View (tube, rainbow, N blue to C red):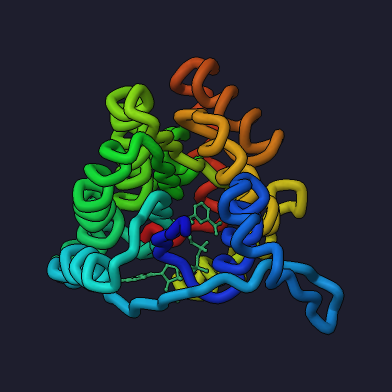
Length: 260
Ligand SMILES: NC(=O)c1ccc[n+]([C@@H]2O[C@H](COP(=O)([O-])OP(=O)(O)OC[C@H]3O[C@@H](n4cnc5c(N)ncnc54)[C@H](OP(=O)(O)O)[C@@H]3O)[C@@H](O)[C@H]2O)c1
């Protein structure tokens, strides 16, 4: 039985399990007898699911999750590091405790969960690690994004190095770099009113982004950017002269980002 460890909740888990199951003959074989149709006609496999609640800002959380999974006798071959949030405002507008928690969730927990679950994946010569980074980790810096962009740049480099180290041992590692995606992200950080002014073509649904990420990790891609528009933004900001790409990103960011 394949086990997915995912720092995700609500509908994302339905999408991700459904999409991962399409890629796995083994998982599908287990799930097929239990395929069901919901009232709105959406089909997905009913999978055995163990839910562990954990606050990843707590430095003890990764080890406690690992211990609980070991105690349940589950073998993990897929890890999705998805949990994340943004802290709006300039760096000094927040107390250190807020930044310390942010770094713990966005970087240290990701690194530690990977360090805990990777050895068994390599020993089994099969594993998938999908790290949900961001287009923000690829484009130039902008004010009011002090640790967020930096943490996502870190995640992209971390994933790419890890992919190079582990792919010969049967483990695929992918950094998924979404742009604007319809989720609760901008409600949680209080930026919904601002980002709602952005044009619709910049946005993708969470289902589209999840599928792009899962397809990429199954295919062994080290990095994937979701959607044509986001690919173009990444390409332009990489190849334009610095003064132009800084002006492009900085100017746009001023329209929706709080840097006070
Ligand atoms: N939405 C976008 O436009 C966008 C763009 C690029 C990248 N991303 C990235 O996509 C990932 C998923 O975000 P989302 O857009 O799906 O936002 P979301 O709807 O707000 O979901 C964020 C998830 O992270 C979990 N989380 C936050 N803090 C946590 C903590 N301390 N411990 C455990 N879980 C925690 C939340 O759990 P609770 O609900 O229980 O708090 C929630 O399940 C993030 O890494 C984000 O940086 C999002």
